Image 1 (cartoon, helix red, strand yellow):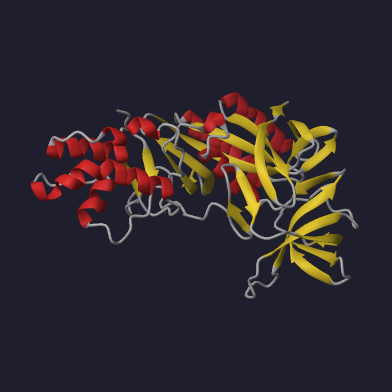
Image 2: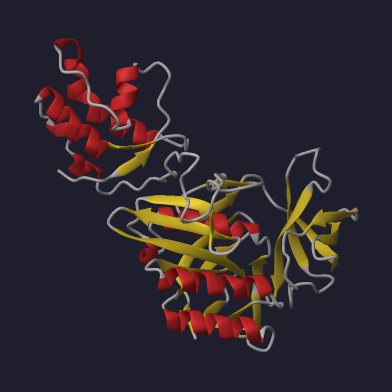
Length: 360
């Protein structure tokens, strides 16, 4: 019997309290005839709930529950409930409920719990971000003040859209470029539409930097990024270091914690070469120092560069744009911080992490 396979699940309200407690692995089922059926079928019910789950409100271990069932009633589960059938199953693992005093080592407050995919995207297969509605094709007039862009629709109407990219977008702000925007359908937003894709050098580039974290999380949970697989839980935006937050903290009782910092990469000035950053970023350099500190404390730290374009097979830091960051990155790498680079397939329907990219 395998152990330690954790799943997340919404427990229906019509389940008895005994089922709910047992499925979460917190209490043994009472040892009496009245609860014999519950003891016998606990594993199969847990499997069904875990496989159908989409909510991130509870975590439980089928293995622990099964062992406690055996100890409580002395009844082996039926063969159909053997945990070996769970081996190929991969499910999102939510953070365990934390007490008010939890997380002292990684910050005073609890980690924020955010949806995997935000705004106009919905969850698809692992590592995939599928737009929930068709993107709207338009023409770029200008991008200005970092977070604003004027565009012209096919019918001639002009509008201002939100540009969720704090960088310079070097090479991606050419007036007249074909762009794709998403519609939030939210009348309360000051700018209802968001800039998603820009065509440059014959390829589409995902310029919404907020998408990178959603892509990375789906890929990590789904095992697409092999070096980051095998962890039991994933938490988002965990406080650590000196007033910093790490994008993801991967944890498992059998290995050191892993701090993952995600960077969205859009810059390409040479054929097949992706670069980061596209502007000076003191904050990004500070993250390298914080990650190095965690490595020195015995943890694992990874910088994950998500290249949101298809025409790049190599990656390198943009030394001439931000020398300080390039220096901090190389120092962190020598100290043991790992560098992973993955490329994406980008089109108006979906964005998907597909392949590793070499780090030069």
